[in-house]
Image (cartoon, rainbow, N blue to C red; front, side, top):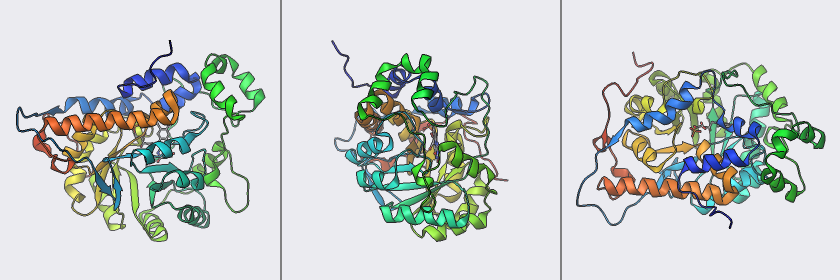
Length: 392
Ligand SMILES: Cc1cc2nc3c(=O)[nH]c(=O)nc-3n(C[C@H](O)[C@H](O)[C@H](O)COP(=O)(O)O)c2cc1C
């Protein structure tokens, strides 16, 4: 008898992903850096926060919808941009369809495996994500392409400092997966025939090119080719951030803010929103958990720009906690990647349903009629939990 494809938690989706994916693909999604401390604490810090539920007077109708940078969302949850290379043949298009079916905004990475045109055709609410990579002309061209495709906002991710080493070792990822490479990797790949079969049915092997990084009429570069260009690009100044925002001219989310002083500079640069984030623990290890950094940033700039959070969100209760501490919404990364790996588009829908169910339980248990009513009074926050960086 085949197992029920539905899963009840993100933890179960991750277990299934680990069973289905070749070790190198699973390892690429776990990611993390150095000791993996930030990766772990992002997730674990949510468990240190306690709920303060009420015993009666619960509300029968509860509103979980919100707007993010003026775009309606059925949930205060966005798909965080990730390059979901080689997880699923439909990749970001499957994620975009799942998000559209659940009324959720899709962040699309410029390092994604599917084009911004295909993804915008699958979801009307796409935010295109860019790093500071290449010349200003090349960046303008990529923005113009995303705008023409229908992207409604831009995400600028600037918190990357090329910290690659991992104490547990990084997976070997080839430049391209052709038949020869697949055979070379065969011990890991053949141990996961289900994964291979999903690609075999489409007649294609995983394609590690990044079509949204194309410049002019050139071919789509490989992931590593584009990554090399990014490493060689001089890092951006705050003037560059203001230029990027101006050049985009629409809703603009700066992703990767950890410090209060940076949050204030982001406001000065004219951003619409910022995400308190440490890149999911993939960047400078031992940066504190994103949820610990949220209260100070929300207090400093929350009345001027929309404050979001990403890092460690694995359940609807985590979403409620972030909102109670001042976030307007959260972005999720690994949570939907595990769903995608476990069961394709339906798996991503399943993850969004798990998050919706958990958030609704929290709003119900706390006696509220909507997410807008969540506040710090709903939580037990242990002394010393919150951390303010750059607030001096
Ligand atoms: C495999 C992987 C790839 C990622 N790629 C990108 C990317 O291309 N652009 C980006 O802005 N963030 C990227 N991120 C970071 C996520 O957008 C997000 O900040 C992070 O995953 C949030 O933490 P979480 O996974 O605990 O939810 C990536 C994260 C992972 C795990």
